[in-house]
Image 1 (cartoon, helix red, strand yellow):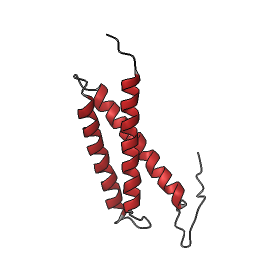
Image 2: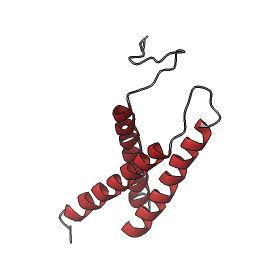
Image 3: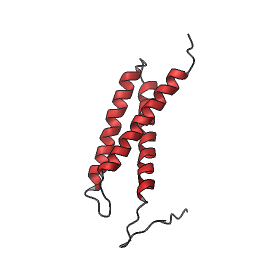
Length: 110
């Protein structure tokens, strides 16, 4: 069994990461989510349409980012932040650019 010990504890027992670490975590989480969405949509489709896969992945991931911040309003000891949503969105955009670059840089098998 792994015991996770909070590194950063504020008064009142609230566990929070420092501001810059929190934003990096948001970026990384939604970068991974955005990449997995676009990868699944692109390779799972019969017709490989990059634009459609990317737009759909962005839409779904941004919906999840917004829902994540909205539900935090109602959870005790959690805080909703517009800046978290911005870093989520930047992570999503970064993953889409990375996926596009990887697909376009692969040699064509024609």
